[in-house]
Image 1 (tube, rainbow, N blue to C red):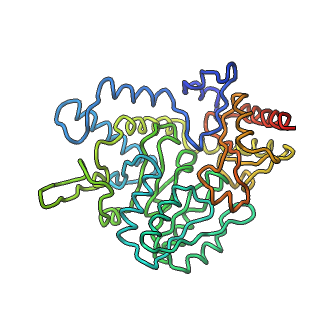
Image 2: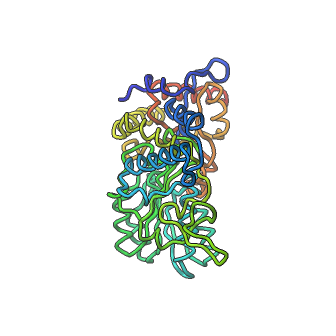
Image 3: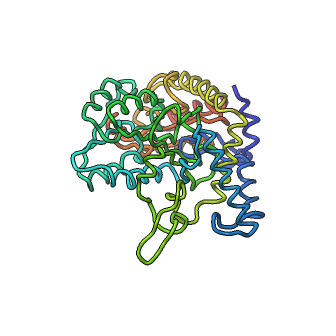
Length: 407
């Protein structure tokens, strides 16, 4: 296992106490991760020494800022094995990346009567854009079912593919169930019937090695803020042929090659989809986060999380009145969502917070999945490289306090 106690020393936030004198036990990384000092330092350095707008100026600061920004793009591309950085578009987050595809690809290429295939475990970000598109274009949305363990039913997936969907979109890893889907196999199955494939990688890229080229998806989206990077910057990888065929998502500066009083010509990739001044320091900070994670090693991080998840699963399953959502530990990533008797998850989270333990409570932007599971909400503990067994022990003790408080 990683030495999480030493790793926490890299993250300034773990120096503070919460609720008076409580050590911070941060178990909410599936929502957003904490940031190491190196990321904070590089962003501060950009603003103090190098800041200017990019791609437009020829003075020293503009050239320095542009170079740092494009180096960050190359770092992120290499991290997920994208050989051509022009296929990697900076967006604000995973949500914007998926909306970009819905707007720029879906509105151009889908027509009345076409099918889109999703799954029952999707985050709202991979549901609502398609609902909006379906209403506008009169497109039908189908869903692949999950089994009693919460795993995706691949037989049903194949059955749904028989409807010949034009687009198949699914999460690499569920933010509620922790399920890691067989995305390469699913992509191959979808491509056999001629579908375009989009993968929501918001929960996978931060936690396990991801090779986008090996997976073979046409679009793949993820965010910096869940992987030790800043908020406000995300990624969309796209198949180059498709990106060239798509119209721009937003209009304005930097996404143009030429503008006249009669119209405009769009810029080359990736700038065609990067209108306006981007999150410059944040993108450069993302590059620093990639350096940090690479220095530790994604295989090592994933292995560590597997051990922590197994430890947590074994501890929580022995807790009376607690029901874990989803499959056994070896079939999931570092996420465990649960219900506790008749105690509302918000009450669970509030008592845990009084002990310095940060978890998530609610529907986790997956209301339809909770409806499918016939529960209004759940409590979610999620783990990362800075968590260890002591954090899990604190969680279990906190849950026992919840049970005492509510009798």
